[in-house]
Image (tube, rainbow, N blue to C red; front, side):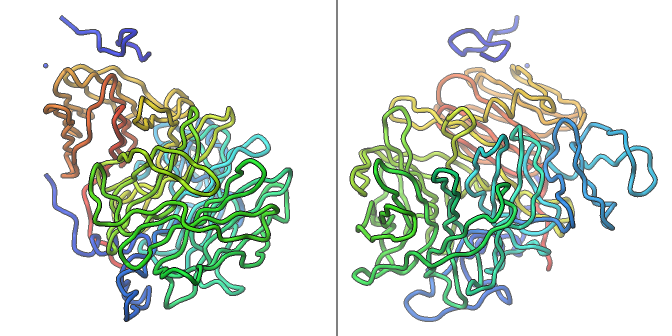
Length: 516
């Protein structure tokens, strides 16, 4: 239990806008997953699929001939020795002795980036993919479009590694367009014995609504180089599939299963089901789960399920997905129920995220086998808005509280070096020391005012069962308060709030207009 709280999770009582998002940024937001027309970045498609063409996958890497640090951890060991010396980025708030690329005896501290969230040196960031513990390190892949801060369909798979989930080192790009792929869109990675296989969405322009599922295998045990394989799945011919992408592969007793996100008839979100005995030959088994967009209670789930994934927590099967509708990204929803023989029967729907930032979660298990999710954070960008865009959330650990899915920041992230931990009552003033801050707060107190160096950052008010969050930048929203402690993570331009009833994220930086 965090300091300042009793064993029931209650606080120990003590004896007290900026401009809205520009039109340009709003248009980028509609495009973020490849959704919608993107001017010179994509080609509009007429006909019945015109409103269902777009996608959601794009991350970014910085240019460097060697591996380079893109997260900022305790030791600040890795940095990129190239001509972009002025762009060197360390964990903020800590000076590291060592050679400077500009002759300065101390390396620069970058106050433009979060300190424990994965960002990239330049370009557009999107979905994190297949966070995996392998040979003593965490590997995460991600969608990215290099050298620009707006989306394009020519997505790559970037690759980064970490030993502590806070400090990330970028590796060579895993997959790039070419060899029959106009874009390498989202998917998943599985390990069978000592063999790893990536399953990704191969798209061709201009009609990139309908992808194909293709594989890639590593040529080295460190997963730094990959060879593309065959196309193993295409849309079934007996149903009217309008969108097809995002394979998720997992082991199910004596065989492998694969879910693929789809839209059917323009009205129904679905996950299509496939099976295989060897990861190479796949059989289409039918629709694993589906839901019409007209159904709104208890949770609306849109026209398309992006990145549908199935996993089990405490004996309960969970289907999680990102809700897409008419080129708009919404939130993360989940279904609790039973997975059996390639079909998921949903017994209860729920909503996991609030606000406009969280999207495209990727399921993982940590080195101890704990289940978790990591998300794409939209609207996080550099001060000028022209160098890098997007970030990966901190990894979260999942539990079930009755029939509700609960996500909390991974303990290795929030309890490690580089993070200041606080207990707050009605107000707290933070110090600009370059570290991330985690605040534990009892929502029964009613209000929390957060300042940094006496400057306002954030206000949270409780009204009934909801928390109303207002950042000084103008960002804000509402999330259910739930029971017990609220965890508030502030890391440079990133705000993440976790309650027992949901997650909320927002940028802590004023919106800026973006130009190419």
